[in-house]
Length: 325
Image 1: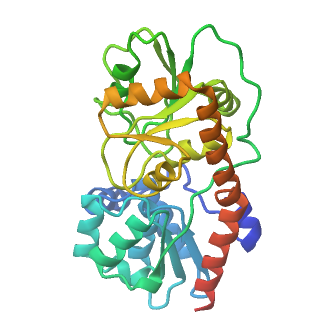
Image 2: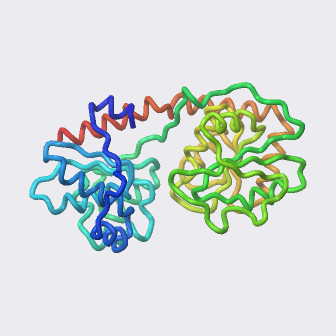
């Protein structure tokens, strides 16, 4: 966001502590989008911007409340919203029951699957929906020295749509250590995210940034184990692991994961298939040269197309174009 702010000479507006009213609480419950604090933020944005402005929201949980507040204005700013999960029932209901789509000038998302869904499910014109590549910080997430270990280390991370039950089953009694960085800005652990109890070989912890980078670097194989879904959770973790040039095993879900697997950047396995996951991990551990080749292909792909700087340039161009319409 700081890079984007500098590129556009923009202001960053964030929620304020205590910025919510009874009305904000009610709106968070009835449409079911966003929190009371984000509805308070949307209300402040509507009051503090002018028709000549352009507002960019990093997610629908803020962007759609802003759109509904803009609907009350005679003349409103332009609005660009990044949409992460258009298939959620609450998003479908919001589009059906309100005129939210009339008050968003540009919808941005990160997979063609989601872009197509926005156009077809909600009747949004093709030119108002764009797909841009995801990104990672390739200046921070880089290859580095690997610590010596007595046993192979299997790394994993994230919480959104994660399936650590399958990962635990795939790695039990294999003589491998599993370390999970259990943190996500977008999701909380659900009852079926982790096995209960955790097996002895699996440790789950929160990692600060440098600790997270060390986990990537020290992993012999990094595994992103997902539940079956369509909107592609896990991309941030995927790009960070590849930027650290580690071989990745990932659950196959529609979209970019399939493309990466088909191009040999990662090894993909079916959802919930512990046997396939175990064999994929063992295959990479048993063939270090193949693992190194796969890691190099993924690393090159991320460096070429998914750098944060390129992402910011593309996003700034889309926002600037919307401003001129």
